Image (cartoon, rainbow, N blue to C red; front, top):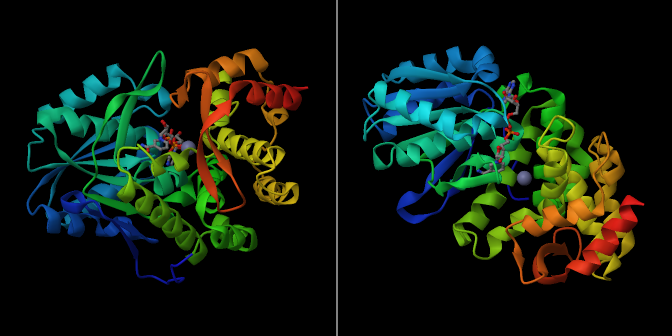
Length: 375
Ligand SMILES: NC(=O)c1ccc[n+]([C@@H]2O[C@H](COP(=O)([O-])OP(=O)(O)OC[C@H]3O[C@@H](n4cnc5c(N)ncnc54)[C@H](O)[C@@H]3O)[C@@H](O)[C@H]2O)c1
Ligand SMILES: [Zn+2]
């Protein structure tokens, strides 16, 4: 927890990746600086603003005006909202549209949206003309603290989420915290699970700050900016150490092994949003760690209590419509990419703020634990 609380000045977090380094600019009203900031990086560039229809209805006009204010030529592409847009069909159409709009090597793609638009636009930028630069203007809390940072881009395959993609870092991220005012409350809360994750995995002081200040984070203002900046700083530090997820970056998967299985079991539907699944997954990871004697039960309970206090689900029983049972969940966990030879790689915890990669968790232990939770 290193960022001071600030007023109207943006907080700038550096993602230190050598010649691929970039800034994350965080603050209320920062969308207005889009044109000036892009013009500084690429004077006279054309920008293609890519959005979904929900976000476009609220923010596309302001984004286009901000880009034009920097003297940039602007074209727009609006896609349907929802995870289904991360498909080959929409990728192909987006690539064709970018080419038709004559977006060339010195031009830019600007992703204005949540993680769906960010992941799809980033991937299109990675492959059109063998690589275009792109800017992320994340509009969901999840996108501001997670998906817009770190350069993972992807679409989904019928076999699973995010299976087709590329590492492609943006050249700039502008996280305007005021854009979150139009985000549905349930989406904001789900994104908050990833904010809490940074405290739970590596920053006990930040977690304690969240326990005391979460209401202000939800309300907006400087506390929200502080929470987003602290989250981005945590992710940026991990990505700078391990861009391609061969080690430390795996810590960002705290709660995700259980969470992905629950999310897949619920069919990636409104029954369970990603962040909600991750809240349950983190609660399970803490309980499972406590049961293995890695931390006191009371500390696991404290972690879970905060997630529940903000209104996130924390128990498997909280999934609306229920789950398909332990066999199905174990199959889904087995399909998770973090599996090797019957042993599971899990992110476990020795306490709040002390997650670690456990490469050798016995699948039978996980099954017994889940069976008990489902009983
Ligand atoms: N690349 C990464 O590192 C990474 C990390 C985490 C998640 N992801 C991906 O991110 C995606 C989920 O992102 P998400 O939760 O942002 O979903 P999303 O993009 O579907 O956005 C959630 C919903 O909120 C709407 N919305 C977004 N911003 C809004 C705003 N300001 N006002 C009103 N409505 C708004 C969207 O239209 C959508 O209906 C998943 O596909 C996931 O795989 C990627
Ligand atoms: Zn996540």
